[in-house]
Length: 84
Image 1: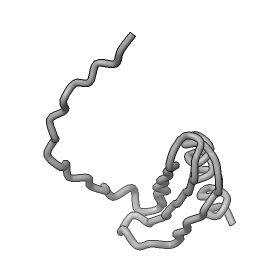
Image 2: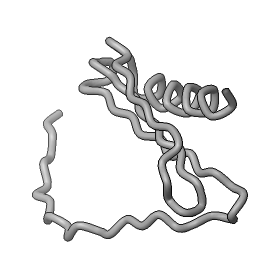
Image 3: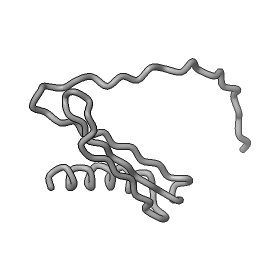
């Protein structure tokens, strides 16, 4: 059994926008990555108010882990820090 490789067509970049929330709300955005699965992993979060001002931001190297571990850690630590 062999592999069939199909050429891919590059897509144009898309614009990502952050929309304002209600005035009394804060927004938690998270990101994660792993170089391999498992592989070197990291996570980061940022908390902004409705005006877009940053109230909290962090990043952490997780060592060897999976992309699922990195995603869950980003959300967990972001919520934990936001609550404190």
